[in-house]
Image (tube, rainbow, N blue to C red; front, side, top):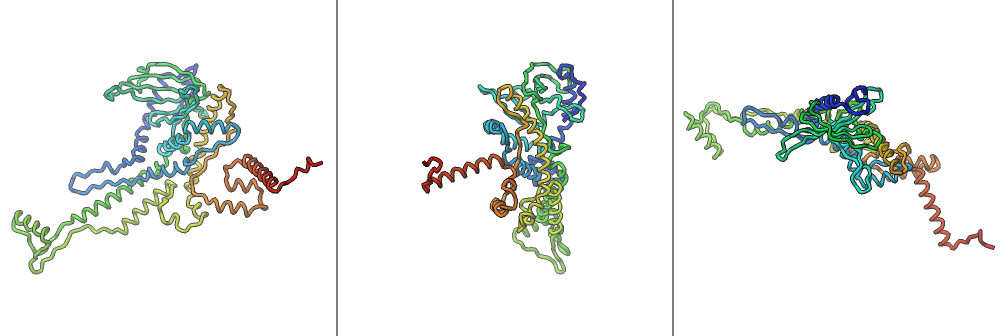
Length: 453
């Protein structure tokens, strides 16, 4: 997110090319950070750049991709289950979101948020015979939103640019799309940082009532989920790589001979060395001895250091190691919840910021539905995001049954499933009870006493 004074815009709400160029230049200063985060989640870590001048020295470069693990776990935990919409108009939204694959879109957007600390969503009208709103994920490498400097940081405009390539994949320029409230402008240029080369191409009207691009943040500072443990990931890769290097060097140890000789010249020494390797026999003079010159490896200390670094990665990223025996073991459900408290806290933070973007999305849907005479009020829609953790339904159902008469039916129901719609469930329960009563009356031949004379 970029902050600029609203007075820098033109009076009619358009964006001066000089302001647009400055914003893009400011955005591009952060590209090295985004590229590094992208490299790490894809397994291109710093250890892969290590080289030794002596090519004979073992140079293993192992990558333990904790970055991908952290993002995958968190995205699955927060976005693994579909967002649940309830309230008046939720059915219309549910049918539209199912048609436009909103669940997959949210997961893809969630991965960008986890890796880069922010993600960008475009709401647009598709080109169907009867157009409907659809969603797209824009790349954080080429997209940003510009907000004013007020305390609310209201969005002024957003931009997204792409390279223009010829048939030989040579860059010929750029196309810049500027999203404003009420319209979308398109520019082409030869130098993206030089406003003098910007050439206006055309304008398309927008009826969403807002800037069509929404920024979803991961947290207050917009940091990625593994960004704070990059140095620990590097240390773990280095330790594991050097550990394997030491093993290889141990196999290539030097043979030291005391009070003995393999020959008088290089030819004799080489011939004797070949004989020793082949026949596995070494003859020494009286008092002579032979031994390997090796590097003493203390595996216990290395293993302790490895575990310490790995534990720090999981501790400071707040993502537990699910394969750790101490994590599961014979722990009770309450003990497991304590072990997951860091993950849940992080999940709640991600959920709060994601819901903020979802509410803005619904307000844009409300505006476009109003023009299509479709009744929908975003304020009447409730949003719920479920965690993808194993749930002991049997125990919860047993607790709900045993507390009958102590707490209300509604409370017991919400404790069993906090996201359940109580009124809808009550209506379904009454319908089932009426149907069961009618079936019993029919089975026992009950009479309709009201109609008897």
